[in-house]
Image (cartoon, rainbow, N blue to C red; front, side):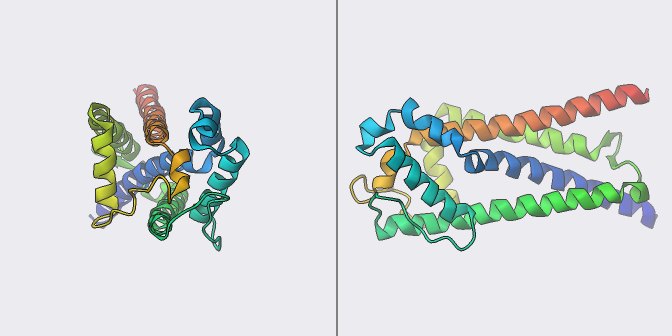
Length: 220
């Protein structure tokens, strides 16, 4: 009885860990792959619309991302002006960036531990399906639901997102003149980030579901 319960707990642990691994890896794509942003500089005509050179834009972005993703970095926006309120928003953002990195590391370690414990617990299954299958299904549903809502009204979704993750604050509403960094971070870029994240989630989920399907066929 205890062995059966332990196996179920391990299977649930795997499903949850894999789901959060998929999610945090996908969120990390637009964060850690900086060329994704660099490609937008000319594509969105940011030098012309912002009044800054491509090099200044890239340097400002790198400085902001260094602060958000690396320990011990001080905040800065290159040659661009940034208000106290604007800086405060990036301080709030760093909390979320650190949370994503922490969950990514924790879920990765969990998956490694579960990999080495697979002989002890046997196949990680919940009913007739593997735990990975449920993680994959959950990962498919999430971007489809959220993506569908965002596609209906991305402006509204953008506002709702900030109200959820930055409750009671409005420092995410930048001043175009006092917070010059916002000139090179248009809302269209964040929409593309959302698309990349959704694509990352779906790709990983599809790979897992294909693996589940083919593994099931081989066992028949």
